[in-house]
Length: 394
Image (cartoon, rainbow, N blue to C red; front, top):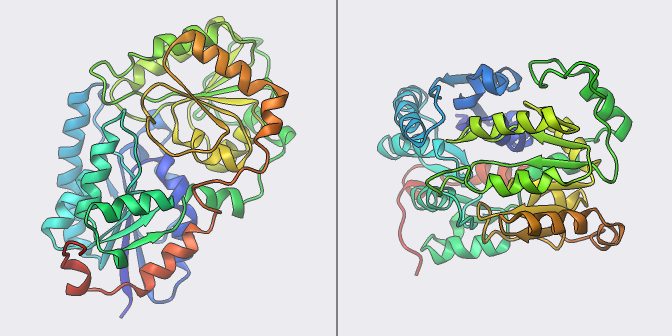
């Protein structure tokens, strides 16, 4: 019999990382692959990205509330849990694979636990102490039965949590598979693609606005709500103040669908109305990686500033506490959410000397072979009681 593996994706962000894993799993004759798409995938505000999922069997779970508050986030978990309980009850996969540390993943893990479905978890053992992601990630680790760690230190932390060594695999990050396996667009191609992008994905340009141009001074900004703070946009004041003094062009990419995301979108749009800047709603992953490759510096608190930027040899200014404690290479400049510190870091990142100094860095998140490694493990992992019954490592 085929081994049934279900994979949960909650947004374009995690699907972009999962895409090559889904591609490899779908080509295994002994695997019956199912994809469960939830949350922002079905939201017009976030680009209706569910239609881009390439899989033969997709189960849709509607759960994202039309809200910009922490109560909305909490209720989304509840709605998603109900939907996923029904979906998993029907599918009954041999293994459920979940990704990273988004709060929606709790809604997948909880019913899986009750239904005795073994869980494979990607990106356990990492640290982001400035967001609720940290607690979510650690909870998912203890609820899971197979662990794919993105760094060797993360694998050690999972073992320190009492997980048995045979359950832990250092795979590297799936986000680097796209860097290795796809041909990125040139600077001219990216600029052409962005000029021709449908308005559903690109904020409507102002009359007579100059087209997006990329170069060594282009600032790409991706800033997400800091979910551990009571006011999740508290640190954003200093970021926008720092950017106001930066020589354009500046390109913003939409934040995650967390409490405070709409406020950040409004602020980015207001900033763009007064400065030479653009706001991109949603980008297909190849376009995004190509944009990042051709930018001068990435500014914000996105995980792509920690992981992909190193392999693409792009300076990254990591602002505030959201990614606090996360491993990274020397191309990442950590700064507090303080305008002068942010501005100094941007100037450093844009300097030719710094750009030269980060060429050829080793990425602690692997070499882009994660999908192959994970597929091999998922093919060979024992099923039934051997996988489901856990004990503390000696």
